[in-house]
Amino acid sequence: MLEWTYKISVAAILFTAVSYILPRGKIRNAATVALSFLFLTLMVLPLKNFASELVSGKFVLQTEKNELIYQAEDADLERQVMEHYTNRISEEIKKTMKNNNYDCKDVTVTVDENTKSESFGSVLNVVCNMVKVAKAEEENSVGKVDVPNIVIDRHGIKIEKGEVVSEKDMSEEENKIKNIISQLTGADKSRILIRWSE
Image 1: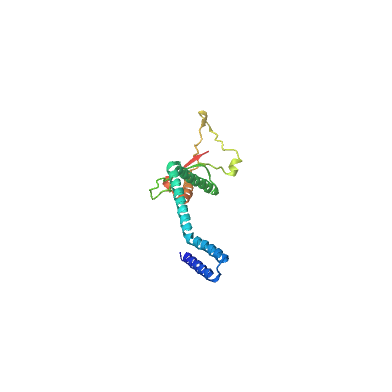
Image 2 (image 1 turned 60 degrees about the horizontal axis):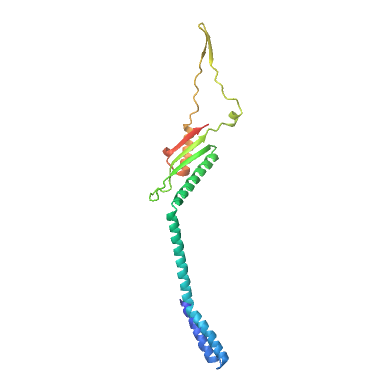
């Protein structure tokens, strides 16, 4: 506003000076008309700025209104955002598992979708389907074959079944995997389920 007042003052001084300095005649009349248009333009300049601000403000309000209407009509938008969020978490878990030499085939992540909750967006449950990875030397060798025991005694020949060899206990591996996932996602270890498949 101060700048506008300064411009008006300069134009008024210039208008007055030209009307006193120039001799009467066509040159003075032409200069007076030109300076009158300049003075009028300077007077209307704030109205132009005000009108443009009013129009742009109205345009911004209309745009925001349309966006809100679109969001209200499109209830799938929130669901799509949550799906993208859970997919990103799943991809990050798979990537981290791969970096730690584990093969995670499939991950299911459940997050808190209640926008009014304090824990909105936090990971509630993780189900990770792990593939048992055989060591390189075991992959190139012949698998273990159980041969029954043949017993020869005075009653004859009989075949006894060998001892049942239990598979390796996977609880230690599961704890390592749960620790990695818990540190990555912030989920409680008791809410992380590891499933093993061949």
